Image 1 (cartoon, rainbow, N blue to C red):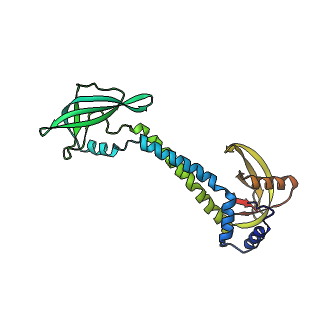
Image 2: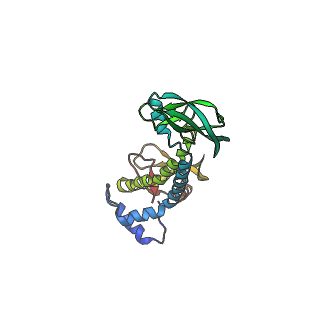
Image 3: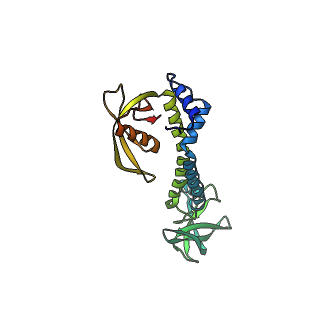
Amino acid sequence: MKFPHEDVAMQSELARWLQSPPPRQLTSRLRKHLEKKSNTWVVRLVGLFFAAFGSIFCAIFLPWDWPKELSLDRSRPDLVDGIVTKTEATNLTINGVVVWRNEVTFQENGESIVSVGYTTGKEVREGESVKVRLHPEDLMLHCPQNMRMSKSSLDTAFVLLFPVLGIFVMITPWFTRRKQWRLYEHGLVADIRVMHVKPTNMHVNEERVFKVGVQYPNFPEMVEAKILNADDLSRLKEGHELGHPVRLIYDPQKPKQFAVL
């Protein structure tokens, strides 16, 4: 990671700290500086956006009564006769088809019970006879046959991807930061030769990814790594064009992981 030239005090502190053999212990001052330069707040903000709006979508579209319906199906429900007493269109559409709310009245132990079921599209009409699934041990758990308890169906469960993606994006900087800290605490400092800097066809956030070949002093073969960081890439390009060695810190166990100093 490249530190600004005007931050002489931090550069000097970093240089002195890196002279000690690994494993080193990052000071709170250095950790804060690394966090500040990583700009992870942008990534976290994007993750928060997806998580927040995804949660709203989940609240609207997920079939929250599906566990009850699963319990009803597993109970080997009784089938009783019922009459459709009311049908009405809801404000929800699935794949362009309106979801309908249907009320079916049936008799159980001399009592009239209304069972509500949802269908995608108008499947029944008022006055039509239908069967009602009734839990044998829980008279409060019922649903008309060939209908569902929730307004939405399992087809809308894909909305879970939005909050899951948001949470993943939010926690990714934490793993990246831990990885960076480990590199600085356990990595080795070396002056390497840049063998080549080649553009790839890969882009991340509209930024082209480059493949860089580096030669470590104690490695018999060249190591290739993909680089996106603009500061590191600029220093590596300069070293390759001028033939100057570039100082970096790298993981001896995973030499493709390094940061330019």
